[in-house]
Image (cartoon, rainbow over all chains, first blue to last red):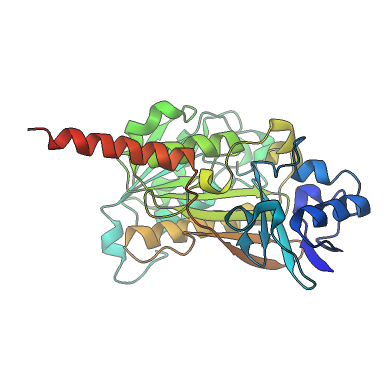
Length: 91
Length: 246
């Protein structure tokens, strides 16, 4: 199992949980597992083509998957995956 | 004064532009004024609303309806009589690049992702460092953009999300102390930039979650596919080429 850090805007899918567990050999598989456990969350992370949405970043153990193997980035037990979206507020 | 040491005289000649004088911009401007900054520029098109008051520290109920930049300028001048304040009661846009060139550092106090992209791109074009922050609910994110030397906002988030996916503070709520904290951090980072110390949040994104009490950073890197950084590099390359022509 990997631990997935859930950002505030997506916590409505995880009953408010800030960190949840999911499994999969790659980031893509992990996102699919996440969606099985928390239906609807995938479409907030990936677009209709299955690519990570351009205002969301995924980090595996602090490394941006865009500079690794993107959705094919391998995941192993104990990894930490962070979902980091752009957030708007400030005024 | 906030900064009572050797860097204070260095700040007296420096100019900081605060874009958006709301939840982030208010505490950032206050801290910079108290730190001894020479000139603060304030850009904001909006009047003060009653719903702003729980988080926008420069204003009080008697100010409702007045332009934020006018009230902020009054308060800041009273707080720091030697401070020069310049105001623009208008919405920041791509046409403000020339304005940015007159400042040493920019503080992002805007409240939409679209505005944050506009400010990022303008900061790159003007080659002026930008201290970014975004806040929602109990969460704040900060990063610093040093054009040509660090990841920019567009390197990290490649395009703005649809508006319905990123509610503003006004729409989704925000805890007052979280914006105050983030704004104060922005001011501290601006001071670091102005006195020539290594900034804390270049190539790093700080996420503060006041609900869980966690502070985390993720490392960032310039994105070779970043359209904003590429455009600026190409523009400068073209200009360099022209200057070589006798």
